[in-house]
Every structure is written in structure tokens, then in C-alpha cells.
Amino acid sequence: MPTAGRLAGAVIFGLFGWYLAGITIPFFPESNAPDFWIPASAGISLIIGWRVCGSRAGRGYNEAIATGITAAGSIAFCLLFALGFNQMISNAMRLFYDGPIDAVMDVFSQMLEFALYFYDWGLIATLVIGAIVCAFATEFFGRRFP
Image (cartoon, rainbow, N blue to C red; front, side, top):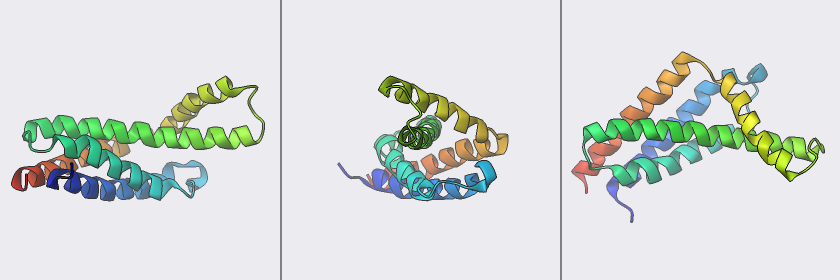
């Protein structure tokens, strides 16, 4: 059921995902991000803001810290999965795999490879602290407008 907390979480995390997409472009090889990167990052963050953070709004600011960390991990995993899946589809079109199981297993190795591209303490801190700040804002709206 839609609430102010869910709406606030969706909007705030959607904007945060758009910001994250912008600052992560230099981490791609040759600073060449896929065409879907900015909309996918904003869309995935919007969904996680609605489902993860917005559904837990109104429980207190201490709970918001844990919710923000959970949202940060969820955003990172889903975005890495989207990149790995896209790379797997690209490899599959070039007949790179012997079978479907090889393709599915390669998604996770591609996720690890992309995670190594994004391994930067500044980026990780931005993700975690930004998600906690977004969770605080969601908590604020969740408490004020139940």
C-alpha cells in the first residue's frame, strides 16, 4: 500500500541512484559505461527505495541506519547483477558458452569482475553514507506523514 514513506524512499533513492551512476562512470574501462547504466541505476535504486527503505519507514532513526546499509548492499548487488547479466548476454550472442549452465555461472564471475572495477574506498563510503542519509530522509517523511 502506498505511503508517504514509500514515496519519499522511492524519490530520494531514485535521485541517489542517478547521482551514483554519474560518479561511477569514470570507473568503467576507458570511462565507457553501458548505455543503460544511468536509467538502470536510477530505476533499481527507486525500486529498492520503495520496497526496502520505504516499507520500513516510521520505525525510528536507529532502525534507519540498518535500513540504509541494507539498501546500499541491495543497490550494489542488483547493479552488479545487471552489469554481469548484460555482459553474459553479450558473450552468449558471440557463442562464447558451451551451454546454459556455463552462461549462468559466468554472470557471477562477471559480477566479481565489475566489483573489482568499482573497488574504491571513496565510492564505497559514498554509497553507504549516502544510503544512510537517504534512509534518514525517508524516516523523516515516514514519521511526519504516516
